[in-house]
Amino acid sequence: MSDSEGPAEPDAPRAGKDKKKINWLAEIRGLALMLLGVLAFHTLVAKPFYIPSASMMPNLMVGDRLIVSKYPYGWSWVSASFHLLPRSDWRIAPRDPEYGDIVIAVPPDRAEDYIKRVVALPGDRIALVDGQIILNGEAVPQEVEPRLRIPADQQICDGRPCLDVFWQYRTRLSDGSTVYEVPTYRETLPNGASYLIIDHQDQWLDNFDEIVIPEGHVFLMGDNRDHSADSRAPVEGRGLGGPVPISNVGGRAEIITFSLDGSAGWNPLSWLRALRTERAWTTLRPELRDTEEGANGQT
Image 1 (cartoon, rainbow, N blue to C red):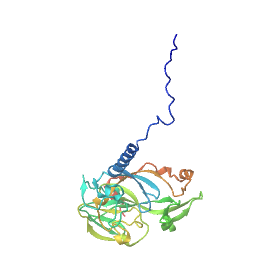
Image 2 (cartoon, rainbow, N blue to C red):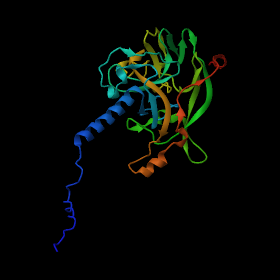
Image 3 (cartoon, helix red, strand yellow):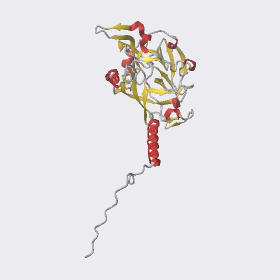
Image 4 (cartoon, one colour):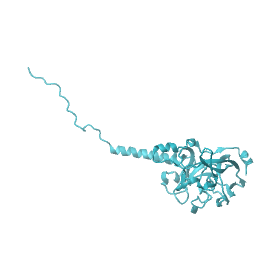
């Protein structure tokens, strides 16, 4: 009787033979597509924005993180991420801003984003007299409001506490906390857009001879009127140098996502202590009021 052989056993796999090879070309292509998708969203839809200065107080505080939508006024050279395109006056799907919109804009001499409020539109006549806007020959109503109490937290602007400019309004409360009680007004534009401003001193930007806003331009101002380099200020003073081309306006501020008071350090636990929870998810669209109501409170 002959010996029978059983089925042959498979060879033991050699270490590493069956490991799947990484397709580095496909990985790089996937990362590139993901990066392009992020840049496209950042360019065409929305981008995050950080508030670095006190020029829009009391409505925006240093440390606020915002969402800025990129499409409300169409797209231009300034829409591109990191301002990669050369300056030009072309616009795709152009639309004009509305009174009271908070927008980001690029000054004419440097690639920085400023955040300001639209106070005059194409064709408007605008002047300032003693800090009050005169729009098309009519004074924009300003109502005196109760003084805002702004916490004296650790907001830093250009290496110094932002609120030092309000030193004369510094007050210690009964609970031991320190606040600044600053002169506050409510301004209401012709479409009913209403918002708070701070105006606490007489200074050279309070008066501005009447000009006509050219087509395709807007006039921008900060809500912290005595501490804002905006359309009132010359380019040499780091201002916007007059009306701003809408092609230099990169989007509209929509909402505050979260805010840090400046006390956060490298430790993530400090971020929680620094959160201003009351500011999260605050809309930045101006309140709309009856303009006749606003006119009754004119100062």
